[in-house]
View 1: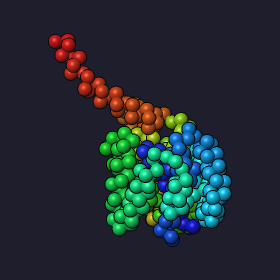
View 2: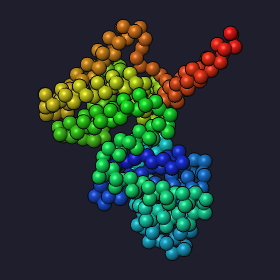
View 3: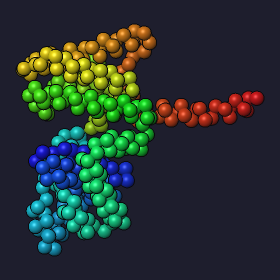
View 4: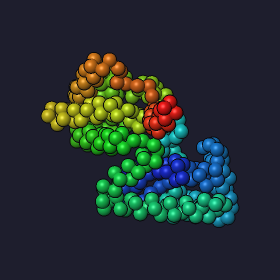
Length: 295
């Protein structure tokens, strides 16, 4: 099925989901839902709970429900795509009935909200941007950073649309071209960049500074424009275009570093960057008091 994966948040807990474009239906990772409703400490304990629950449901005559549940490849905690049990909204509601949890009713309301928001976003795509803004604000990002991140998402979409138009395959070929762009502007592959920031499954762009984001956008936007002009016909030509686009941003990075004397690329990740902002804010609120004491 045409699958659009997305992480949804319920009470700040991550639930993996997939949108089926053809059926216009959400599918939810059952293990993630079980983990949330039963407060399991990790995925292994949640999987064990779900295995026991499946046996009980089968014994209760709900075998058809289990048969209808699909398995989809979703990103696991180690960053790899693995098959996991998923259920649509109707199936999930039946499963929830068998889980004694004080969170069951709030979760049902959340399910209804997720479904309604998808319909609203299909009618008005701007709502997708507004809800992404709300999510990042809840995570503690600044509005300046969020504005750049949302713009980066659009730039990336334009680039992948251009790749699609030239026959670049999603998955491995996308990853190869992305690495070429990254190496050309930052001097590192995506994996090396993530290692520098101490990241594993986390999104690299969500852990970039504003300047890092801007340069990454410049690299991808330039790659898109060069591709439109040169119209690469082979994957090898797409690689050359990616390197050329990345080099433009790489030259800009070197110019900035030459003027400031400070490296653009930082090892700080999102948590550390947010702490810097928090410290600045706390300093701003406490400094007048300290000055008052000196007087």
